[in-house]
Length: 82
Image 1 (cartoon, rainbow, N blue to C red):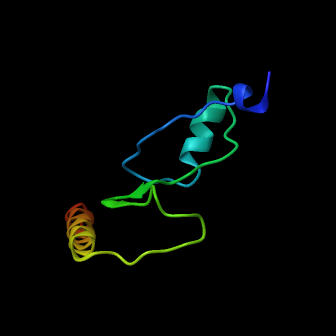
Image 2 (cartoon, rainbow, N blue to C red; image 1 turned 90 degrees about the horizontal axis):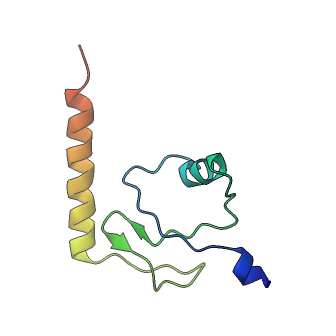
């Protein structure tokens, strides 16, 4: 059996990025994570971006991130008691 046959590739989508969430989930079921690759951050997809490289966001991505950020801030504030 080769190294590749011993390992599995899994694609998972999470809506809230908690520190080491995926690693803890897989460890809990007996499958340690050797490597993680983020392919998107919200509306920004990075699948074709080589490791260590960057790209500028387009206007649509910036607008969508701003909209997500402002709605997230509003929901946080509405949950506070004063």
